[in-house]
Length: 256
View 1 (tube, rainbow, N blue to C red):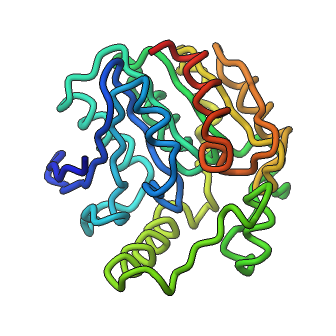
View 2: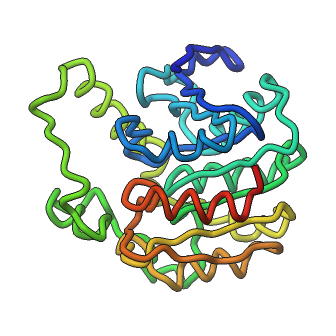
């Protein structure tokens, strides 16, 4: 079910499915991709609350909102509005970055955290690239970097209605707004990851070429209470390529 809600004056579209322990899921730069089975796999165990970020999927993007800081505070207000307690917070890629920014500010409503191929941190030297510049790749190269099997991610845009194509374009513009400079990271975030005492699972698709295995390991080492699990035959979006394996590792860690 898709609901329209207002949080701190921002109109958001929110996917809500399932029942049980609440799960706040924050999507990647591509959006929620609701036609894929991953959301239902999680909703079989949790009460999933999955907002479309401002600028994506029909959610409003106010003129004053321009940083991941804004998103973090917005989702803290959303968690308070839903009166979440002992919830799981999870995110993939860009959404994993946002989830971490939420937790370094206030983790009191969350009892577990799952970060799947997160972006958002700079661990190495200033001149070392740790996140591939996705905007600099042509579509074929991007798919080869992001998917273990690029054929799984093929989308027939010619079959989509114009209204959905507009939303896709708006989402890409929003991703550039929130993550362009510095590119897809907050240079200060790694210095605050010690504040995340919440038990955390870092999931990494073994064929992710947007980031590397060492990047995932750096996330696991920087979080005080984290472990790392990998998913074979998956790239940067493991919940899309391997939804069953993703849900199995997810539920094994964050007990429903």
